[in-house]
Image: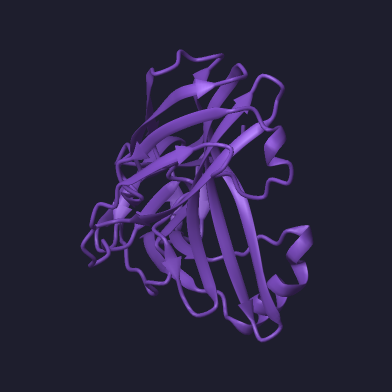
Length: 270
């Protein structure tokens, strides 16, 4: 076995805020003495765009017009040149977390998550009541051929704290056909562009089944969705770039027809 290096972070949930100190140890394991020219630890973060096949041209034009945003950059020298004895050595380190740009609201590197300071906005609840019938559906060509159904419900708020779940309830009042499933679909919508044009990519980032089978009519079904920390951030809108979120309530009928109701969300960290 050669020399093995490992990094261990002291904070179990690995979530930090700007200005806090990231601390831990670098573990060096070796059977023999290790000669080295110094040991240092470098931390850095950046923004990378992932191009989809359908929007490569527009995204590349946008990317070339904007320099990558450096989020975090820091180096700590822990051990000067010398020799480490054999066995297991733990070298402690501390990093002050300094964000160089507030354009990024959430970043991750080596399993560590950094939140910038909370947004200085006041979150006002925005409850939404909804009714889904054949008449309320959009983009339907043969509305007369649809089975009759009535679904009611509400979302407690579409202005959401990213650290709190999306909640509400749903009731299937009537349906001429049996139901197969009811699902919550969380979608991230990224829009970017420049003089060459704009591109919009919508990506499903989470799907939760809240009911299965032909549910009882008149039964209250709770809506409860926790926002996944790896794939969500506060809603962001700039001149050339936007990150937005939507939730779809999807009712799957027994014949696999889909009934979908869409709700834009605004995510905040306050």
